[in-house]
Amino acid sequence: MPTRQTTCSRDCPDTCSLVVEVNEQGRAVKLRGSAQDPVTQGFLCERTSRFLDRQYASDRFTRPMWRPHKGAPLEPVSWDFALDRVAAKMLQCRAESGPSSLLHYRSGGSLGLLKQLSDLLFEKFGPVTIKRGDICSGAGEAAQEADFGVCDSHDHLDLHNSRSVILWGKNVHTSAPHLLPLLVQLKQKGTRLIGIDPVRTRQASLVDHFIQPRPGGDFALAMAAVSRLLEKGLRRDPAEFCDHYPEFLEMLNSRDDWPEMAGVSPAEVEILAEALHQGPASIQLGWGMPRRRHGAALVRAVDALAAISGNLGLPGGGVSYYYRRRSAFDGLEIGGLDVAPRSFSEPCLGREILQADPPVRFAWVTAGNPVSMLPDSQSVRRALSGLEMLVVVETHPTDTTDIADVVLPTRTLLEDEDLLGAYGNHYLRSSQPAVEAPGEVRHELWIWQELARRLQLSDVLEGTPRQWKERMMVRLRETGIGLEDLERGAVRNPYAGQVLFAGLKFPTPSGKMQLIHQAPEAAAPDPEFPLQLAAFSTTKAQCSQWAVSLSELSEARVHPETAGALPDGAEVSLETRRGRMTVRLRHDDRVHPSLVVLPKGRMLRQGGCVNQLIEARETDLGGGANYYEEPVRLVALG
Ligand SMILES: Nc1nc2c(c(=O)[nH]1)N[C@H]1C(S)=C(S)[C@@H](COP(=O)(O)OP(=O)(O)OC[C@H]3O[C@@H](n4cnc5c(=O)[nH]c(N)nc54)[C@H](O)[C@@H]3O)O[C@H]1N2
Ligand SMILES: Nc1nc2c(c(=O)[nH]1)N[C@H]1C(S)=C(S)[C@@H](COP(=O)(O)OP(=O)(O)OC[C@H]3O[C@@H](n4cnc5c(=O)[nH]c(N)nc54)[C@H](O)[C@@H]3O)O[C@H]1N2
Ligand code: SF4
Ligand SMILES: [Mo]
Image (cartoon, rainbow, N blue to C red):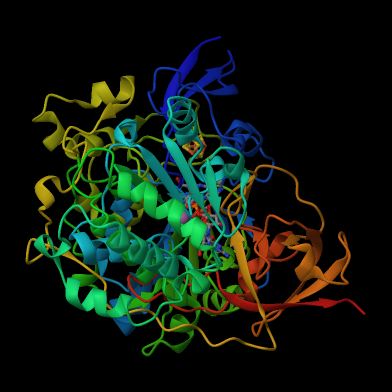
């Protein structure tokens, strides 16, 4: 059967090269991972292995849809009908209330580089109101930028130089599966693997040592390990390459109960400290861990631990969190927050729209499902429902399209044409259509160009997708890499080094690493809601895009001790200060006793969404969302 090659554009660190088997009718019949791609290595994750069910789902949007009035069902209309009305409303809002009365919201439904052109159009039209911060990795990125001056990672193959690899809050089996073969290989050759997670994930059976701190206990764990390292003796004086070392020591010495605070034993601290002391040790930080109130402080504490233990700037070391996936491509001239007349905190989007003065009248949402995925779903729903016009560019129905006035159908990852960097490796890839889009589905660039024409901005986005890809390849061409090379397969980013901060030089104003020197305040316990609610990724879903049919109720996993008299399988009420939701209880002794774990991604339209229970709050830095520490209680259904 003929095959076509493209790239998975989902919000996932791996960015796999896909091989699509296409039959004579032009229908994709099988998806495989490319064996030629050094990261993909011939296999796909569970959710994309099942993507053909989603690709050919009967509820796929294949025509523009229009809601004649609020509450009415969506009706199919022509592109001209839909875009004429959208453009007229945009011009009206700008003329009557200024550009800040329009909101542009783009999330991570596709990580294609061309998706930024939507930002460009809305900036040229306005600039309009945009989001500020980042619910996904905002806190972690801001933490590393504060410490190192940049948030980037060692090459993943540099792990071959590590004596120990510490998987800190990183659920590789679920959210970065293509790192697994490398970890297995490293283990076989004797690299020591350590996992740190409040949930004993499948990783516990892979690693040599699994440490299960209390959720958010990572700051204290890092401090406990630094204390132990100081007792062992340091290889190099941190003051030579770090600012604020005396203040850091003062903070460290302000208490002596760090292991108890972290909820770990001195023996576990010793395992961690010894691995770092021997070095080289690489810390692989998960993207999830910093999604809590003091998320950035946790990352900064881990960065400090790596610095003081002598594991920065050398092969096999480093704290790898996010790979700068756009860095090799030429950027677009977008001013972003510098020019936006107004920005709303992404985690608090619902409340910010509801309180906006002057009010928001129009919103354009693309590549996201904010009603289900942002904290406090109900306020997001109320805020977006109350606008004069909500336009959503989508492939499939969501909680957000359920309240949209206009839905514009766009291509799936098998139909798309774009460029991709990865946030879990240093490879660059291209996507090109493996199958034709059905019905009246259009590439997003076509949608923006048609809109631009109606807004008298035709010149802003001129060009085909391929021409735009070429425009982003100028710097790469200078190194001899062309678009044709990316279309043939993954190419390593020639601008990314193997190792960061060689010679212990940091791109900070002083040239030194910045040590955190203020401990976060512990949250006051909430006796009425004594547990913490968190919803983590599962292998069955990509955020709100499920690959399996869902059971009637969401499952809440709790430690049997925590469940007490509530039996396994019982229907219980999960209650926070924001609301309540009926869930099925599952006893699971791998979950830390203070946690209630739900799957991330279920929608309101699927019988309940965890984010309806989660308050909208920002993290300490970077405008992240505090998703993982919502005070909660379990109540028997009477
Ligand atoms: N299958 C699947 N894969 C995905 C996604 C998906 O929805 N499904 N989502 C994608 C997205 S959007 C992203 S951002 C990435 C990353 O996706 P994330 O879901 O952010 O995954 P992880 O980085 O593995 O972070 C989650 C891990 O952090 C642990 N954790 C939580 N709190 C703490 C803590 O306080 N301390 C420590 N040490 N650990 C903690 C959790 O128990 C869990 O094992 O993955 C992508 N991959
Ligand atoms: N409780 C809780 N909530 C969380 C998290 C958590 O851990 N716990 N994780 C958070 C994280 S890390 C993230 S990144 C966010 C993710 O939140 P979102 O980015 O909103 O993620 P999705 O639910 O995947 O929604 C993306 C939508 O884009 C659509 N789409 C796919 N391809 C395209 C395309 O090419 N163009 C357009 N226009 N649309 C496309 C998909 O059909 C899908 O409906 O959720 C956050 N929400
Ligand atoms: S979602 Fe991630 S692991 Fe799955 S195919 Fe896409 S890039 Fe690969
Ligand atoms: Mo994310």
